[in-house]
Image (cartoon, rainbow, N blue to C red; front, side, top):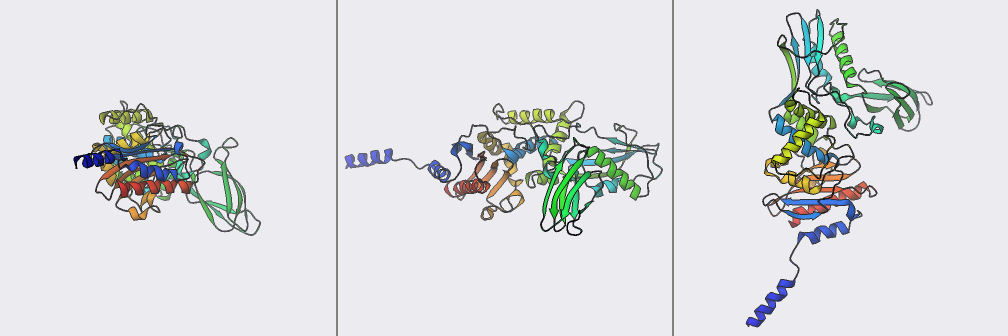
Length: 440
């Protein structure tokens, strides 16, 4: 009897132990994605242990998933109660000063609310834009994308998303269309668009021909609108302010010089947006301006001169990661939004960042399936999946899964196979997440 028991024990001992790896590996093998272009890390947040990995230490371009990391580092400095403020001040000499807060959500209506507090006999209107530096374009951003509204410039002068809506209105068959803007900004168009039988519009910017020159070609059958980034955010802000003052019958023909806020000026009006609004813009709506601006605003809190720069923001991020005992030697971050292809993260670092107890709060901030950037994906995982996606020249997704087992896992999936179809990459992501939910 003892011999039978020992034989059975030996037989069982040489059988392969159950491993989630087999299921994940099968999903990957059955996909149309090159295995070498996939990086995965899955961590049990209770134990902190990595339960599955594939090339998890390999550096990959992360795309917008990177916003999770830069947002959290910036929010840690600013705090939940921080408000992005644009404030109007006045001194005893009837001079006004607008203190900018690089508010990424500031609108023309907000600016109007402030500007209407200015009296018609204003002697001067100053602007203090010292909260962040004057760099309007992210490091490594591609100039070929300068007509992409998602890649609008950003600065202390953020207003209306730093874009204008341009409409191409058909006229008569074969005749040029009419071009109209919803807000004034001196864009110049070479209008080669005619009224035709289909909507086929092409826009290219030719700054080397003339400043702000856009060549519009093709044809339109119905009204077609495009959102175009303003080339100069400071100019757009000042033109908008001038128009608001004129509409309010405030005859101010002076210039808007820079002046640092001083005690002689007293606050008379304020417009602000809270952290929750900016947080949603970054993590749920993938707003690049909000991500870049917040990163530099956080840096301004640490900068000796009070001016936020990307380099100071990066120092804050590294300091934060060091406090969590997360090594940053194997990552490279050159912007806050993840747009630049020069960014490099590892799946292990990203999943470890998410799994760290100090960052579990991110779970409640990320969109769940069916909302935000997950609005049309994996709706059956609502309340179970919380994640941020990245889709610019990569497919990536990172976040949390509440598995059927009752456990919660932090995960990161990076797919840098540029030859594969986008639909195939999304399908692989979904199948991998389904495995986490059902098998772990």
